[in-house]
Amino acid sequence: MKERTDRRSPRIRKPSTKRTVTFEYFDPEATVVTLVGDFNGWDPQRRPLKRDAGGLWKGRVRLEPGRYQYKFVINGHRWEEDPLNLQRVPNEHGTFNSVRTVGSNDATAGASRPHTGAGHAEQGEAR
Image (cartoon, rainbow, N blue to C red; front, side):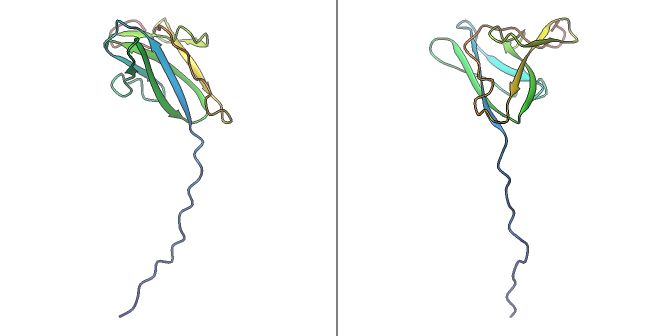
């Protein structure tokens, strides 16, 4: 019986250029805080943040270097921009989106500080 050999070359995995970016939002009264942005299709179900005992909500996202727009969604209905991030752009809803730039050489690019925010737009509500 012939022994079968695989002649394909092993796959070489390129090193990831993604960076871990931390997002934080402070609201001790909130029951749920999620992160939405152009990196997740503005889907408020995809990126819930975790709350600590003091009311600081925190999450980490792995992103390629680039420029990203985002907001926080509080309790499923209040869309807030990041109050500690002064980089923002107007959106089509008459409000602003926060902007985070992730650098190719900075593993912590765009790490935010605790904040109380404002956001993209919820369906049927001005964003």
